[in-house]
Image 1 (cartoon, rainbow, N blue to C red):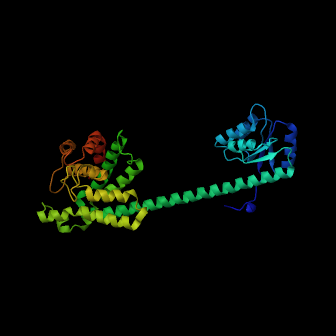
Image 2 (image 1 turned 135 degrees about the horizontal axis):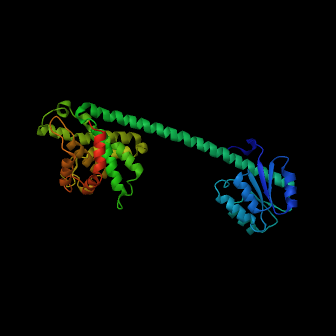
Amino acid sequence: MIPHENIVLPQATILVVDDTPANLTLLAQVLKPEYRVQLAVSGAKALEICRRQPPDLIVLDVMMPEMDGYEVCRRLKADPATRRVPVVFLTALTRPEDESSGFEAGGADFIHKPFNPATVLARVRTHLQLKLAEDHLLHHNAQLSGELEARRREVERLRDTTLFVMVGLAEFRDADTGNHIQRTQEYVRTLAQWIAAQPDGPDDLTEAAIDELAKAAPLHDIGKVAIPDGILLKPGKLSPDEWRVMKTHAEHGADLLQRAIDRLGDDAGLMLTFGKQIARHHHERWDGSGYPDGLAAEAIPLSARLMAVADVYDALISERPYKQAMTHDEALAFIRNGSGSHFDPRVVEALEACVDEVKRIASRWAD
């Protein structure tokens, strides 16, 4: 924190509140050589002045009619505009419990009547210095927060750019996929949002998690970079041996992303975790007949179950050199027939509920 003795105080405004005019006059005489002084003869008047323009510090009498100083202080501390204004109580009360009441109300200090002018000046200056130091610290923290947020955005842009390049490598080697990456990303986001909005939706499927999940979706086929061109680009049907090699893209993708997670450690974040789940498990089937691990039902990560529906649906409605495209209704019927065997029934339910939005996504990002 900034040392108090190094702080140069600008001319501050002090509000003095006391129902005794003689006390107001005396305090004004003490304070005016160094400060701008405002006077109020009641708590209500003090609150009115503070609503117009909060002072830098308030010297507040405790024993006043209608509204005592404690109540005035409580109201000041309840208002965000005056919460941080220091309140120094001025009182003839000397019992320890009176001071406790003042501190509980939010007061910063006490000056006892009859008061010594030097004491008043010293206490006022001390609390103005503390307030100014606090203001400097808050301003500095706000600047740091802004810089950290800017750095976070920079790191996020770098991460997203790196992701774009990684996905681009896989797309470059499999040109037939067109806008499949973009469409499946938006399908996954839409399906996850529907599931999260249901009364029994997973608690951890938050808006932030869904955003990371959608960003991870394009990584589902990243492992294809490890598949030889002769297999990946073959226009006809794969042989059994070729198909065994092709299926290894799920494990290759997960291994690649695990290396990134290991390198980043605690900074890896949800996106890479979701990406690894999707890359390895989006070819698993609800009934356990998928690959590479033969997982079944909810043992398959939700991220991969979402991707499975999105990936197959988009493949069905897309034309390829080796097949014609299905209509949306035909693709939906195919997915529905696979509910409970190939696909998670809840994700299929989400697809049916969101089919109009899915069609809009397919149209917007058509090849």
